[in-house]
Image (cartoon, rainbow, N blue to C red; front, side, top):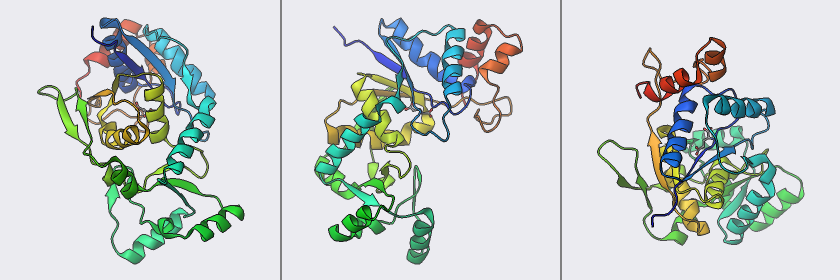
Length: 289
Ligand code: GLU
């Protein structure tokens, strides 16, 4: 018998949901419901500056209004920070993390001095300044209370895994394909920020493993992040889910729907008198861009 399919919707409560979110949520929900699987809801709210409890309440309200139901309790990431801390301690014990004291200005200065600024999927690649600090200096700066982030020593992590990584992508035209991963393009990525004791990449990978997610459905702007997520899975001995990245929805102007560009929120569509069925049709029928 095939294993049960477990999908999830994992929004960050930084605003109200718009049609693009509804598209993503409906995709995961439908796959789970049509296969007799499970659909989970997770609130990715580790950033206390950008995330707000009233947006979390709005997400639950909007999904229920649309007619989506989810299985089991909602996992709220901010309630699990010690669990992410335990994973960081594991990675640290493997010698794969180092403290980084750099400010943005320090990094900009270093990059200017080097004369070239390679970029990865998350932006500027870290030039490695703090990787080269000695143990005594690290200890002294930590003891002095200097704030620090934790970065993954990418070269050491790749040496440890020592095999090519790939994932099964179900979201491409032309059918499923195994895609080779290139996590090195993230460089020494931050896994715990100075102000937040974890990062999106760490929490999303850990929770997908812990919650037994077998199929990650999300927008294709996150496909590059999967390369890094596969590396974390390999390092930590977590299973590899399958992935179905879907195209981003576009508005009538052909531009991708996003919060920033004032995509209509589900709340606004509801306010304007659209029924849940009509909004579902808009979210599922809108031409992907
Ligand atoms: N929390 C992420 C977001 O709202 C999505 C994470 C994911 O689906 O992997 O963009």
